[in-house]
Image (cartoon, rainbow, N blue to C red; front, side, top):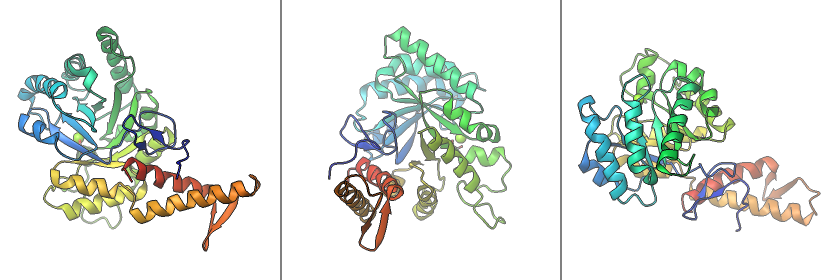
Length: 328
Ligand code: GLV
Ligand code: MG
């Protein structure tokens, strides 16, 4: 069927991005692969994996003494590697360190043409996004790059960040995603658990529900993507899947992967099932058919035993858009 162009955006590679606007910032991000910027072997290997996004890390996966060289390693791999089909991101250090400006200047001056976004960790307030936006603008102007092309991914990793998440989402048109950083977040609120992503022992409900929903609401209210962070038990694929399914069920667009074994799980979990995709397409067809048959005077229709109306159509568009983004 011909997709309704309004809720999805055609990407340069012909795919459709999930979402509900004509923004070109909604790139596929079902699986976001973390790659230490100081490890050439991993940087090489990451290029062959089926992740939608890679982020080359200058922050926590990179030891302080390794950071200066890692900046140049990342520039080289962005410029010389084959990242076809992947969203290319570099995670810099947060503004409370003394590394951020040098990370941004070196990476963007050196590889700004081959880079989609900068990820800013531990974002606490809108000003931190504004500062990064201004720095990026200066570099883009100096280098003769298109101004505003490089996006920002904002990681929410502490109570201040969560309190300010809507303002953070609105701080710059460059912001593309809001990411939950569970490890730092758990530490920052003194959660009594050491297993990142798993429920803290002794609490009978979902300890992450409020955080995930608050991030999701800020993302949706501002037409951004919501991404769930890492699951650190990399050998426990079933555990990864359970946590990823929780986020996907709420409406999150993707999740970090720290290991090649998590990539397929993320791609599958953050795509609709074939059955749901086919059903969504059927709803769209049926709705269009019956409402146009009635000359635009009918607001609802029947699909078998199911009544469908404008709200069903919107829900179907989301599933259909995600399916198309996944190449269905
Ligand atoms: C990721 O950065 C996390 O802290 O979970
Ligand atoms: Mg973190």
